[in-house]
Length: 262
Image 1 (cartoon, rainbow, N blue to C red):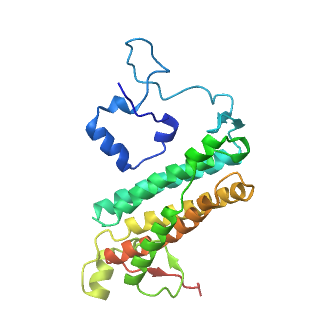
Image 2 (cartoon, one colour):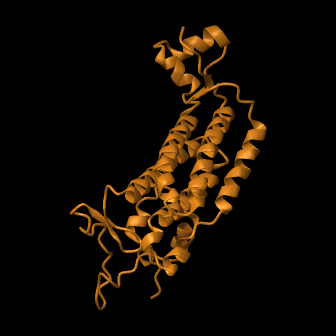
Image 3 (cartoon, one colour):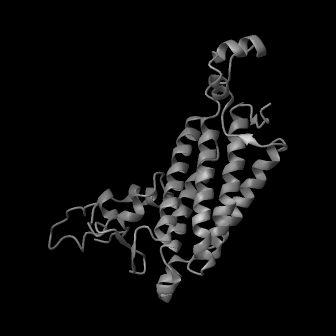
């Protein structure tokens, strides 16, 4: 039986669904996603365990087989990109609830982040040519992000000040005054329904993206990772900022602008 091989450590960092996995699942049973050859003998088709115990002493392996302490800058960057994918996955759920049309972009981004992780996990100082070829990061996702940013920006009002990542409804709740009362008295209309969860979650993902970019920058400068990885993360934070504004606009939520306290 032919099986598609994935490492558990790579799969468990994806909270969203990547299309190629979904399509493969639709054609084959779930257990065929994983190879059992190194875990079972003969006719034993047991599913491999999620834990390996190889990191119990505080060391982990890169894709090249090099053992490094878990606090190494490579694993710090991998952890940040993993957290970023999780943050985007959470934002995606809020966006799906509001039926936003850009959620397929978030799906694609999560898949690209797996490629980012693969490149980071392959330090060139210990990589063979086969490793580098297998984990090479291409520039097309950067172009995609720039295209999406330009498309959203054309529909957005000009940016004239700093934006606070909260929804209109959340802002008024901070004042400990019933939101319904404020809107009835001031705007003579009911408040927008839960306007802002999508936007706020996307802004949170943006800040995680900035941290991921900061942790990847020294790895790229040292020549251990592809420069396009850093470019992608830089552009991704711009995308998340823009799409957060777009989500807020589509949900009818007023953007909160920074005002210097008097």
